[in-house]
Length: 304
Ligand code: AMP
Image 1 (spheres, helix red, strand yellow):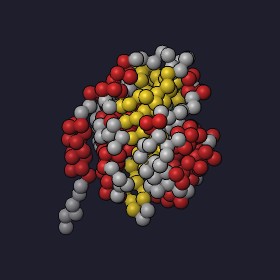
Image 2 (spheres, helix red, strand yellow):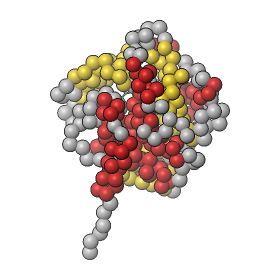
Image 3 (cartoon, rainbow, N blue to C red):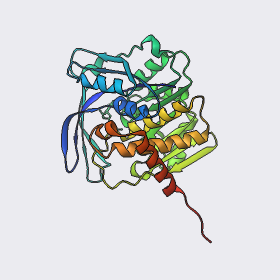
Image 4 (cartoon, rainbow, N blue to C red):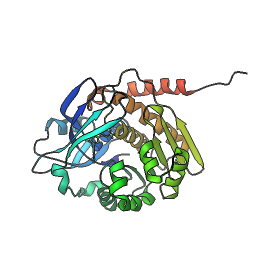
């Protein structure tokens, strides 16, 4: 089963304490689409400018990512730049240029409107709602969000929440959204606002998953070398969405747990190189191998 993904497609400039690279392919939808493509075909929705490399469309095609929903508009592609601190976790946004994103109003091709699985990757909640409204009978809807929308578009975000099967956000966003210090309380408060499940990411400390009377906590795959954390969250969301779509039907909680591990594994590969470079060469075999390693290191026995 394919997954429809809408979000940003960007050219990023990323600075870490040791390296800086400009005009790299980025954006929430770019990362999410590639993350999902290891498990399911993708239908991509977004906008790019006339400076966007044509080779990327060929690459998407080679990975079963349908780009019929990607508009090419006159002007420049959305640009974002960020800088990481020494912990490679704390990030400061240096600049944002909306460019063609400013007037983006996604209109779905008719072949997209019957999609069952939908991932609303990080963009303004009003656009996420606009896309969702065009899908006839979505069976499973996931959304990602960020601090900017919690602060500036809370009304739209609150309208979206009851329409979601899964909301994905990080720990600081969950705390900001609920004004709770405990992530357990924050997860429950967000569930009460409507989504059927909530996943809270904790960066290098793993993730929490809340369901109806169900809960799962997993660590993060321990990595020695992190080159660029950009897009880890989007890749996590894409991996989860792709895995769940590939299972077909409405997933049970065991499938959710496995999806979260797969999401973490794909995200762990993503941060090993700048931009999407590691994901371009990654294989499903490497993902499965790391999944098994991760599983083995997460199991424990009590010795008495
Ligand atoms: P993440 O590291 O998962 O938070 O995602 C980083 C990606 O999000 C970058 O590639 C950016 O191009 C993209 N991004 C940054 N700000 C925004 C925004 N306001 N809306 C949509 N995408 C954004």
